[in-house]
Image 1 (tube, rainbow, N blue to C red):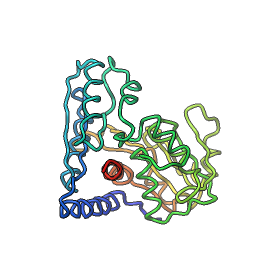
Image 2: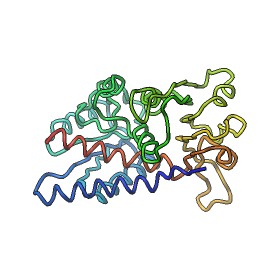
Image 3: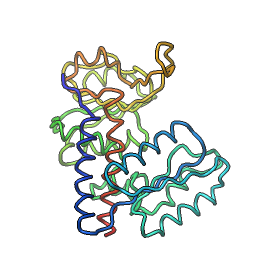
Length: 291
């Protein structure tokens, strides 16, 4: 069994990006600039955005964090997005989700300039991805592809089962794993909350990508020997024995499933660190496309 070490791979990617930025600075060129908008005071969102800013500093990017109050109107947020769309110094930007109830998330994501949409959420970029055209791939699926690539996990002709159909992970992963090329060329089955006999389906899978958000959902009896397991789930589970009062748990019963898997991602330290690394990679790409 091989651990797909997202922490190590993400550090490798950051080092590679930092080397590219160093070359830009040596030539007197503009370095990539990533902006992030956060609306409200959600603790998890603030922590996540802060980690993105820290990652930018590490690789030599410029970064801007824009904080807006929980009472921000949809119009105010759209005005701020328009400002970033038209700011030539900003190469890419993200809007941290979730947004307050008074704001239409889909309307906001549609307002982002597709050329600065480093999250890869705009319908134009999603459509390009589906058509196998060059574009921004959503960071978490992009990170999964990179892990499979760097560990040389065979995907051609394999049966991939995706658990979950969100626009952020499940649906794009189903498209990407079925595309021509590597990683890809697999036969994909998408399962979700209405799927019947899910164990029968997962037990036939060569590769399982779980993005359900249900702690320890995938049990050992649901997995065949030597399957590749990608755990995207990340849930805080109360734990009195933990100093923080909780532990981070994935969708997979790691202790038991790992005994049967050929490759598996841990939680934490698997897919999570890859997401920020690939956001940086998308920002580098945005800068190259704009300059």
